[in-house]
Length: 369
Image (cartoon, rainbow, N blue to C red; front, side, top):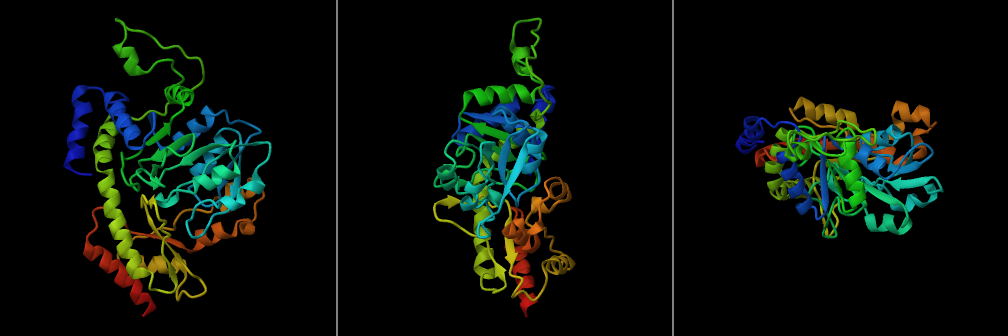
């Protein structure tokens, strides 16, 4: 973020309208246009986006929702919020995304939705997933994938509903925040009500309506999952920079791969023709059979050299709550376990310089030496 975002913050503050209002609406309209959907609905974060999306399609107790075993915990948590059961499926280690070939055996009469995650910004293979489950609703967890393309189609337009995150680690940020995309008018109408306490009209509609005022009715129990107009103003500015950010990240991701794929104990991220990777993160996989160092020691060594890293994300089935609640064994999803224990996200953001990337690359090369 920079001066443009700072100037944008002043607009809602000076106007006195700091909660959800015209800045959020402008952000939503531009997001819908860029992602080729009828509706974009801003919310407080991607976790609430997933929650509202599941509620909109009627997920509740007794239902099952298929999710990848390797993902951020919100994907599964949102299913739990609805009283439903997350059913885990292993990933393809080349892409870190859900393995379509392993979905079919998990489908039964209780399966109501699939949440493929476009992990780290690479879209899941939606066509293959759709061919296996043509009558099951797809909710894209596109938290990492704003601006990403799948066969020239934007993330968020591939399933019935898409969910995005604007956390600071993502390609664009509003500090916290999320967006829901859909082409379904009924889902959009219900989600807008649910994010605003279940109110029949929005605050903006109320203020623009007949004077002295009109009051909403409440036909259902909703939530306060709104985005502020300050966030909306920042998001609008950030969104206009999205493609530039992705192009820059892609250039440096290629730079990393061209240097690091020569190291035999490192597996660099998969890149697929006709996809545009969003590059939220650049995630390596260490080959434990050839690596001269364990994953955790690798991360500690880089940290000692001033290079911050993180594990890619979690194997959710190995986390205490899910392991105990559903009696899951760590080896039930072997690829997710490998990714959990051997993946490393190394720095990739738009303020880095060539000398930063060269320093990281050379530090990693020196481990082998």
